[in-house]
Image 1 (cartoon, rainbow, N blue to C red):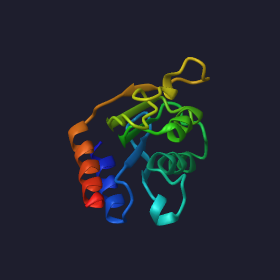
Image 2 (image 1 turned 30 degrees about the vertical axis):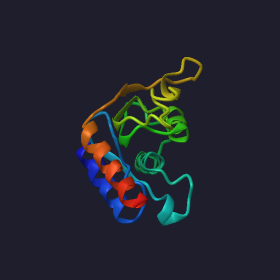
Image 3 (image 1 turned 60 degrees about the vertical axis):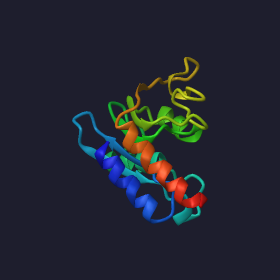
Image 4 (image 1 turned 135 degrees about the vertical axis):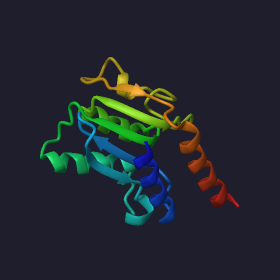
Amino acid sequence: MGLALDEAATAKASGDVPVGAVVLDAAGGVLGLGVNRREADGDPTAHAEILALRAAAAAIGEWRLEGCTLVVTLEPCAMCAGAVVLSRVSRLVLGAWDPKAGAAGSVWDLVRDRRVNHRVEVVGGVREDECSRLLLDFFAEHRT
C-alpha cells in the first residue's frame, strides 16, 4: 500500500484526484503502476486501477491477471471493479472505502457478485486513515 500511496501523491501534484494503484504478481513483484490521469490526459477512463491493469497486462503479455493482486488507495468505482473482474485479478486490497461510488462492497459489490464469471477476494481498510486523509485534504483544498 505504501507504493500505491506514493503513486497517489503524484496524482495530487498534477491536479488529479489522488488515487494510486499497483498490480503485484503472485510472488509480490510489481507488474504495473497506475495513478489517476483523467485531468492530465483528458480521458474519463484514466483511473489509477485501469492504468495499473493495462501496465500489468503489457508486462506479462496476457490480459488474464490470474494470481495477481491489485492494491489501490480507494475502493474502485463500477468501471474499475468491472475491469478487475474481467482481468481475472485474484485479490483486491484497498485502502479507503468509497461510500458514494464504491463497487467492492460499499455501494455495490461487483467484484464478488455471484452472477459474474469471476469473483475477487477483497481485503479492505489497509492503511485506511492515510488513504482517506490524502483524499480529504485534496478535496478540502479544491473546495475553498
